Image 1 (tube, protein in one colour):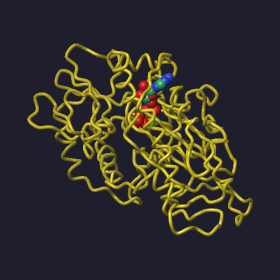
Image 2: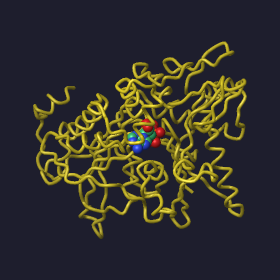
Image 3: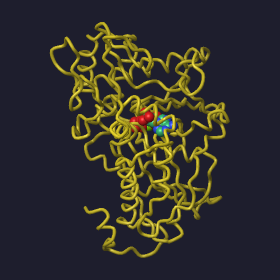
Image 4: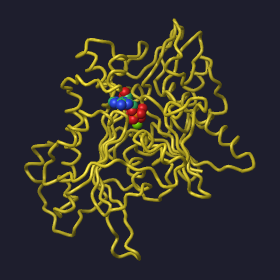
Length: 425
Ligand SMILES: Nc1ncnc2c1ncn2[C@@H]1O[C@H](COP(=O)(O)OP(=O)(O)OP(=O)(O)O)[C@@H](O)[C@H]1O
Ligand SMILES: [Mg+2]
């Protein structure tokens, strides 16, 4: 089985694929809860009575609780403190200061503990579900990185995921605070095995979205853009799904054109709305999700549109697409914050440089072999990444720089001046 773990800023979503018949299933965290909530595990912890409660429900709150939400953002914040904005009272610059302990722990320690719990729950459930089988699990965990990966985030996440795998049998829920020291020690000393020696890997979230596309029934030879706006990060991916004329049956194969990841999403929108509506962030989030119509101008929406534009500029800069018809593309908007109508309007109305023309805005379709496909269609925007991570399509991830210019036209040596203007080096 391939298990796709989308460790999101607000919630963790899991989809697995049974390789014996290639069907997909969503992992139900709480069979007692109907609807989407049962599929979303809060990516947060609560410190209560000297113990760490892993992934408690949002409404599971008591007087002296300290809730740490958006732990994923705290992990990112460690290497980029300028993005600090989780609102957690005991977190600063990616360090978590647990009351009563002498020193702070890097947020990766808490994230590792949470992931260990996630892995243990999935493994135990699948073993219960298939008691007769000798299950082989392949794990793919999403990571917010783009192809540049300038700060070696992939290695940081592989260490976190590897240590979580090693610790998964040891984690009880609630966990003792003293376990944090053991997790920190394991992280410090963990050596990531080679790809051949392990059954887990870390994949860029943008790539997960593209793989979700490849598993879906859309099959045109065309350029596509996927914009995934979550709670803490936004990923933009452009790719060309082109026919390989030299192969039998002229199969479709994607080529990555450009991608980007930025630490921006629903959390920042909530903070701006709270300011405009003069309420707290939680209320702002609730009103936003309920579709409050008095939507003020929001800087974050502009920033997301700029990211979309800059990612497109990267294709022009590297002259990946030359033929005009290849610059006509279809757009998918996924992720919870992608549901926001003002953001959808802003992205759809945003004019891109270099003759790029958005032809359609489409809804990403689940794979045909997803269990309960019709029921899940409406919420597939939240599950797409997990599904892409559970994909077994063996499309090698070539970074965009490895993809040669398309359409066989001679490439100009100098970038166009208007591109430099848009996206200075
Ligand atoms: N109907 C809605 N309208 C606007 N925003 C919504 C709606 N429903 C959910 N959201 C927002 O979507 C976000 C959660 O989306 P998602 O599950 O895609 O994020 P995530 O995967 O947890 O985070 P990330 O991918 O950034 O790490 C939250 O900020 C939430 O407020
Ligand atoms: Mg996400």
